[in-house]
Length: 118
Image (cartoon, rainbow, N blue to C red; front, side):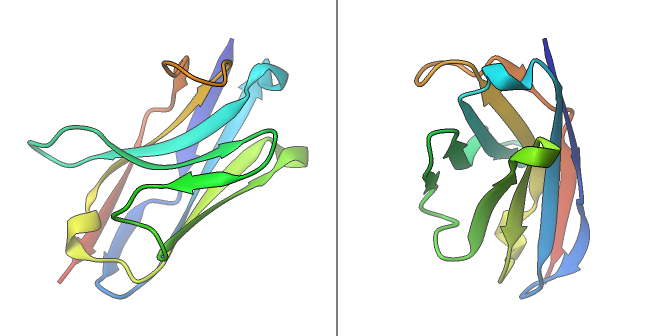
């Protein structure tokens, strides 16, 4: 089992920055991919970014150039640095992990709220 705990959400003005953290515990060695997703009220869950244990990250089109995902393996933590935030970035952000290269995510965090005011 793997447990994921997000932190770092909050209220920020448009153009500002936030950094989210997701710390994993448990069988962390089994995680091949970790990702960030978000869901705004009344909308479907949206892919934000993933990072692979083998290296490399991929970003959703709406956040490319503004968000950066990184990881600290020693701390079993991934980060999402969010810059140039826009009101449309307002959502609950979820950390997720999977033990397979492709497919569904096996583990999800509880989510952290990010609110961007105009």
